[in-house]
Length: 178
Image (tube, rainbow, N blue to C red; front, top):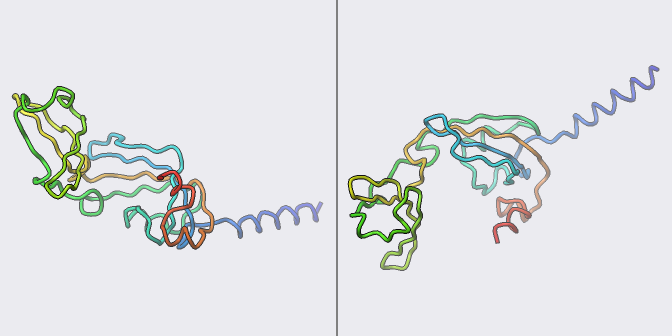
C-alpha cells in the first residue's frame, strides 16, 4: 500500500513539474469575451486563438502581461481604458451626409462600405447613425472611447518554435489567415 501511495504522489509531482505556465516564447491558446462599457458582450471567441507570449503578438500589452504566470484553465479579467485598448474616437474618421446621397443597400445601421482616398488607400467604414434624414459612417473601432473588460481563459500552452517566435503567431494560426 505504501508503495502505491508513493507512486501516485510521484506521478502527481511529475505532472505538476511538467505543467506549462504562460511565459516568454510559449505558444498560448485562449478563448475570450470582450465586455463593453454598458456591460454587454461585444465579442466572444469560444474557439481557441493562439499567440506567442512575449513576442510580436497582436494582444494588447496589458492583457499579455496579465496572462504571465497563468496555467491552463485559469480565467483572467483585464480592464482596458481607451488609451490601453481601442483608443479615443477620431472625429476625422466620421462623416455625415444626406441619406438621399447614400445607395439604399447602405441605409442601415452596421452596414459596411469601403472608401479609397486619392492615394488608393482603402478604409472600411460602418454606418453608425441614421437620424433626421442624415446618415453617418465611421471608421473608428466600435469600442473606441470605451473602457472594456476582456475575460480570457487559458486553453493550452506549449513551447513555440523559432518561426513562431519570430512571427508572434503559432504556425496553424498563420495558415488560417492565408
